[in-house]
Length: 178
Image 1 (cartoon, rainbow, N blue to C red):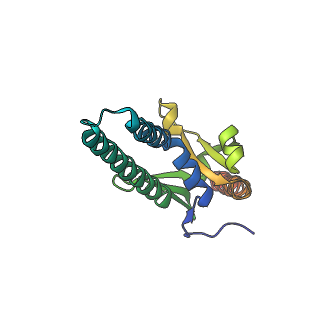
Image 2: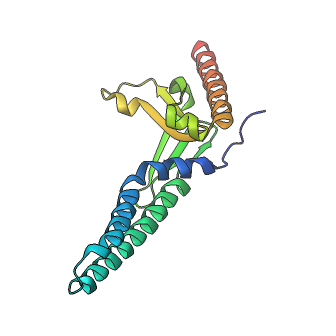
């Protein structure tokens, strides 16, 4: 039982949390700064109080708007990260303004590795790294990284890619012998 051809797969809901956790540091800092400014209002002289309150209000508004922008940006990145299996290649698509579509021909796949860092293990996701044969000098062009795939789904994708790679290499060698 393999994964379906021509059907787009998404990363899963945990990927959104992982992507958000990588961008949330500045948002947390802004909210902490807003809370500190609000708390320090009590020490401001009364003739400066309206300006301090106005500044705290602006900082709070900026913090909330920035948080919402980060949430939307992260959702767009998560939503447009897809992958699918075709008859000849594994295709990964990413990006929402500049769309990037990477294809790995099955007969060029050399290794399919699953990597899980501490944050990945905490979120229950894996990173799939597909290494390909190639003549390009730059090693970055010889690999495709699929981030934040659920642990179980990552094993299925790895198995499916290896099965299809083996099948395509076997069919190419049979054609070469004829």
